Structure formats: structure tokens, C-alpha cells
Amino acid sequence: MSMGNFYVLLNYASRAAGVYVYMAQKGEVIIRFDEVSFAYGNKRILDAVDFSVRQGAKITLMGQNGAGKSTIFNIIMGVLEPESGAAHRAKNLAIATARQTIPRDQLRLTVREFFEKCFAYKVYDIDPKINKALEIVNLSAPRDRVIKSFSGGQQARLLLASALIQEPDLLLLDEPTNNLDKAGILRLRQFLINYKKTCIVISHDADFLNAFTHGVLYLDAFTNKVEQSVGDYFDLVAEISVRIERENRKNAQLAKKIQENKEKANYFARKGGKMRLVAKKMKKKVETMEEEKVDVRKEDKTIRSFVIPPQDGVGGEILRLNSFSIMKKDKIAPRKVNISLRKNDHLLILGPNGIGKSTLLEALASGRAKGAKIAPDARVGYYRQDFSTLNFDNSVYESLCSAAGEYSEQTIRSVSAGFLITGDLMNKKIGALSEGQKGLLCFARLVLQKPGLLILDEPTNHINFRHLPVIASALNEYKGAMILVSHVPEFVSQIRIDQTLDLEQE
Image (cartoon, rainbow, N blue to C red):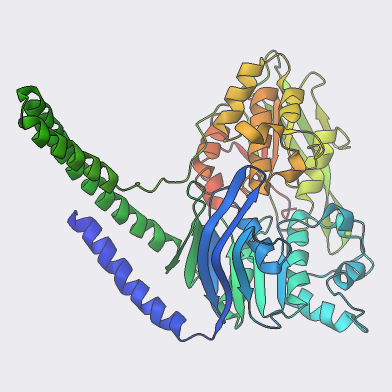
């Protein structure tokens, strides 16, 4: 082991020991998985999974897109039952969850109706409870306002409030930072730091998680096992790196001995007579050493580098934006602007949750923006944060074909494979995909679509952080006109931006 990795391991062990002592002081075990296995059809999701969560702990649940993190949440809540093994919950444990998105059938509810559905029973005088929950997430929401009218960031706050209003013993948060602006993320982070009850969080935002995490449950998509460790995600990565080096070194030593013994066995076999017995024993020894080889832990797969080809034959001004409207103190306020986008021009739009960024992008993408003009021959590629541009009843393959134009089936499958969309996923209904897989599907569609104007609304939402540098590189190199909205500064910093429009500035 290198000295660097020795100190990494020593530092990890020291910190882990401290966190373990802290966690051991927590209360009773309230969630325990004993040899839990689960599969969807032929796809194995969990294989004899064991872990436990103590009262008062704050745990991160991580794993690549589609690995099965939401499945674990559903088993904890009792929505799904293990096919074998058992999921134990403490008696009378109250559980509430804030999912990644508001269900489509609830988007037409009013704020009051939305919160009333959080309870299995009639709650009289619910308004004080709503007030308390909305105050925590810093959101002003008239009770008769329809959920669909809120921005993505505001809906994210409503989701969190819908879990908090239930005052649960165990809070399950599924990608809670999606769509939140910087202020919203900081407020949520501080809330979780101060939170006294138990919380399990699914997120791909490592910096956010590391502010409050006591331990990590890591779902390995290759083994379908859950690794439980103390410390934060970076600690887990350091531990894994040391383990991989140790396993590789052991395998290299065994491989050398195996080769030596094979050569000796072949030598004695050629001698004949009693030497053949010696050769046979040595072959048995080789077989034993082969079995001693360890399976080196596989890292999460990362999508391949890709290029979004710009539309051919589109020149001159692709977009002219002269005016738009924002929401200011719940009132529509007009703004004048002078923005022109041509090929290879990248525009970043800034502004807090609820100011009207998504509304502007939707109007531009649909051609209904009154103060904008898009070149009539320009093909618009629109990545919408709620994936509502996708037909959830279509199969993945049908969706890819509808965007592919003249591309062959071989090209379609090659492009989709680069985004980890292979095998059975091609025949799945889009509605059955994880949110992260829907996001990767959208990028595959953009590659096949070859847009002249690319409009991206929070394209990092739900996406595994391992993929983000690859996506940022593709957007940085995009040669068409592009409009980007993102609340992730690190992601934006990797992309060439030529113009910036801050909706807060007059």
C-alpha cells in the first residue's frame, strides 16, 4: 500500500471510529433489513441485503441511476414487500416521504387539497399546520393556488413541506435539492443539520450530503448488495479506493503464483511416470488459487462522452428576445431586453425559484413567447425539468425512434447504449424508468434530434454526479444556439457561457 493510501485509510478509520461512537449513542434500531431480496421480473434489484438504521441517525442512500434506491424506500414504507428476507420497522413508526416529483394526478389540486391528501384521516383546522410546514421551507403559498402553477423549485419545497407536516419519526427524502436555488439548498441543509429525528436521504449532491450525514448506505448496481459505512460519501470513496488497491495487489500476487505453478505442472506432466501425479497435484493447487481470487469492486458506470450535433443549414440569427415577464411579489412584471443568439452562442438564465425561468423556457420552446422570435427553420431541442415532453406510455425504443429522424436502428441502439440504456430498458415504458434514467433518455434524444436551438431547464436534476462532467463537456462543445438554466454553479462553470440574463435585474 502506498503511504498516501495508508494515511487515507488511517484518516478514514479515525473519523469512522468517532462517527461510530456517535451513532452507537443513538436510540434503538427502527429499520432493519434482514437478507432482503427483490426483483422486477428478471431484473434483480436487491440480493440478500442487510442494514439497519438507528433512531436519530441521518443516513445517505446512494447508488447509480436505476440501481433501486427508490425501491428500498418503497420497501421501508411497506409499499413493496420483499420476495425473500424481511424488512423490520419499529412498532408504530410514523414514516413520511418527499418524493422527487409531485404525482401528475395531484398537479391540479389546490395547496390545501394537496396537504389534506398527506393524511389518511380528516384533519380539522389544517391551516396552522400548513403555515408551520411552509415556514420551514420558506414558501409563501395561497391555499387556493393550484399546484401546477408553481415553479419546479417551489414544487420541491411543497414536497418537503408535505412530508414535514406529518411530523414523522422517519423522514425519507428523494433528491430533495432538485430544482432548489442556492438559498433553498442552504436552508434545507441547515434544517437537516438541526433535525432531531431520523432521516434517510437519496441525493447525488455529495457536498450537500456531507454537511449532515452520519453514515452511507451504498447500493451497488452490479452486486445488488448494500454496503453500510459510517462517515460521508467521500469517506466511502476513500475506503473503496484502498480496498480496490488491496484486492488488485492480492490478485496480482496470486496470478504470478498461478502462472509459476502452471509452468511447473506442464513441465512435470511432460516428464511422464510418477511426475504426472506431481503435475496433477500442482493443477489442483492452481485451481485452489484461482478460487482465492477476489472480485474487485466495480465502480459505477459512467456514460460515454458524447456530442450533440447541431442542425445543419441553419444560419444567421436563431433567436431574438426583446421582452419577457417575471413574477415579482405574486404579480406579473414585464421586462425589456435585447438578446440575439446565433450558432455557437450560449446563454445562461439566472434567477431565484418562482421568478419565471421555466415559464420563459416553456414559452420559447413552444413558440408562444410574445417577445421572442425563433428562426422558422430552427429545430428546437427542449430538456424540460419535469420530463413532460416525454410520452410516459411509449416504450424507450419508441421514444428514441421518434427523435431519430433518418438514423438507423443500429445508430439508435449505439447512442442509447452510451447513456446506459440497453437490453430490457429499451422495451420498458418510460413511466417505469427512474427519474435519472428519464434524464439520460432525454440526452440520448437530443443527440439523435440534432437541434439548432437547445433549451435546457435544470439538466442536472436526478442525474448521477459521475455523469455531470461528461454532460457539461458535451454542452460546452455544442455548436448550435443554447439556453441554459441551472442552479448548480460547479456544473455551469464547466460550460462556455457567452451571455447571461439575470431575471432579477431590472
